[in-house]
Image: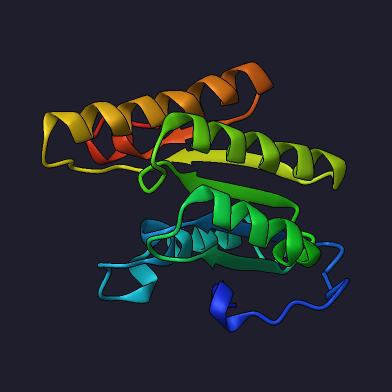
Length: 173
């Protein structure tokens, strides 16, 4: 089954879910949406979907929902998640954010809101940092500070974190 983007999904309260399967949801902005990737199957969301399908070995359905909107800040995304997307009842929410927020405090507040919502709904959370190639030293410091926010919140909350910047640089997960 292919992944579906937020614009493709109509969420009603309690959509059918395969009890023997897993429902993944991703939230983020341009990178999560797949901007700049010419072939959908090369988007990182689709790649993770395929890896999980392979690991399930046909033992259950894997639903993957892509709740991402290019160019959007975390405050808007977490509001949409709380108002609409959480109704899809994912088992795991993968949060891939950092680049579009104006400051670290904004990102921190949004991430903590996601965690409160997910804890109340028994949804597991995975943080994924966004790789980037900022053009200026100022942009580099700003993006690194936001990645540090994700790392710090993940560490204090005992959450797994995938550092895509390290993966892209060949340093592993």
